[in-house]
Amino acid sequence: MTYNGAIRWTSPSNIALIKYWGKHGRQLPRNPSISFTLSNCISDTSVHYDIDSAHDGLSVDFHFEDKPNTAFGSRIEKFLGSITDHLPWLDHCRLKISSRNSFPHSSGIASSASAMSALAMCLVDIQQSIDQSNEPNMMLASSLARLGSGSASRSTIPQIGQWGHCEIPGSSDLYAIPYADQVDPVFHHYHDDICIVSADEKSVSSSAGHGLMDKSVFAEQRYTQAGQRLITLTHAMKAGDLETFGALVEDEALTLHGLMLCSEPSFVLMEPNTISIIQAIRSYRRDTGIPVHFTLDAGPNIHMLYPDEYSAEITAWSQQVIKPLCHNGRIIKDHIGNGPKKLK
Ligand code: PMV
Image (cartoon, rainbow, N blue to C red):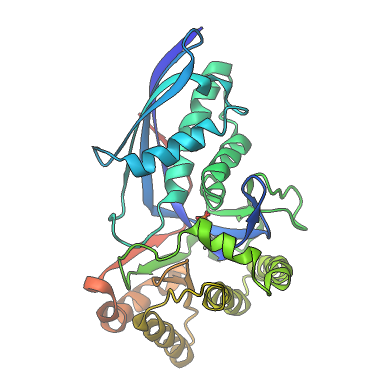
């Protein structure tokens, strides 16, 4: 049997509200997490495939932003070699993969979630044409994305993705599920302005970060806390209770950084301006009553979250107060989006 062709998908990054931090087994989470799927920060991935059952082995030629990239290429090759149980044709094919990001390379935004999710969509699309089925298998897409990078499982989901087994019916450690239809509509148009405090490479890789949890004295309490917070957060999101939502989301970000501060070895991933922006957001909120909150990924950049109706006021204020605290004044404006898209 032979199959060949080319496909192209884009997929966005996501920002976790309840953080996944700690894993086991085959990229399984120690606790459930939930995130906003973004819109503007995307990876755009094309795959040319040539599958021939008479040909043994997998060969991968990977280009990032039009240049060969051996570092990410070997990670991708290892990932593809590890999922032949799901996609047996990977043992008999040649792939040319070419990927680019819409967000600047050194913006401090983690690209593995968008990149692995876009690649997973391409793989599932190839599987769909082999099976001649009408729809891509979205559970498989999220599962494969998870095997590439845990948080990528949530990027395959439009608007709000929930990953990890918990009280939510249908939740699973293997893949993320859609959650947007269970929240107040205020969250369907939420903004995420990413305030770039530093564009440097992260000083701890997420694999090493997850590994720190294995030795943390707080590990068990943290996993329990994350599960409880996820339920409280989803109730607040259903009720449109922005105060409870925001307090929990901020606490989650600080907990993630707190765990890193007291891990062995310890990591300080915030910068002085990270703290200045946190304080500026809190005093603006106190002074105006406008529900703007922050979260952080495993790095110094602030994600400023707020409802659409306050967009004009917050933009005017942040140009004055937040922009000067950012590296080269850079704020990437993003918002909740509709997940992966197939391109011609
Ligand atoms: O998907 P990974 O292995 O890069 O882990 C991501 C971990 C955090 O970004 C810190 C939190 C999360 O849930 O996205």
